[in-house]
Length: 219
Image (cartoon, rainbow, N blue to C red):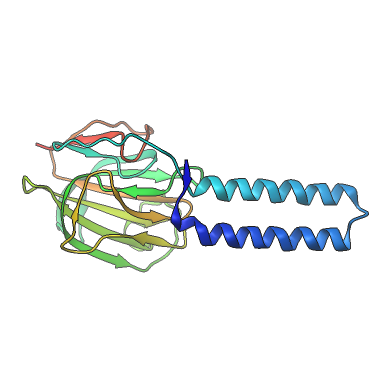
């Protein structure tokens, strides 16, 4: 397991904060043993939490030309027919994956193809499970067209804790299935919009892994 590049700055800032905090406690309250140990334990726990959040575990990623692979780790919170109003402007099958702070937050391409559309939207930071987060939160929208002509839209959505969405794609890029396309810091969500009639292989509340779990099958 390695640490993702998006975590380098946050980890460095966390270490600096922990060093300053512990130095202050040792200087001012060295004679209060219980307080000193409480700060030590808090500092250790904080460092482990930040470190695990930016982990990049080694995996054998799945690639299959006729399948859609989950773009993120997390839990399936939505499988429903809905109106997609930004790009398709018609009814689509929506699948949403919620990423808690303990999940790996790397986002991966669900299919291979050409990026036909990309847009970043600044916005609010509603809880990621709030239905309005799909249209009101900070988010990106990516549309990749498969070689068979099927377009798949996927959307990074910031949550109540997330304050930065990172993406590595732009219109015209040729992308490969299960490769990284972005990262969202702390709690967040990814929505995927598929053509109606697409066979979805997931169930609500199912725990999935990005780049591994098969989400759907393309016709």
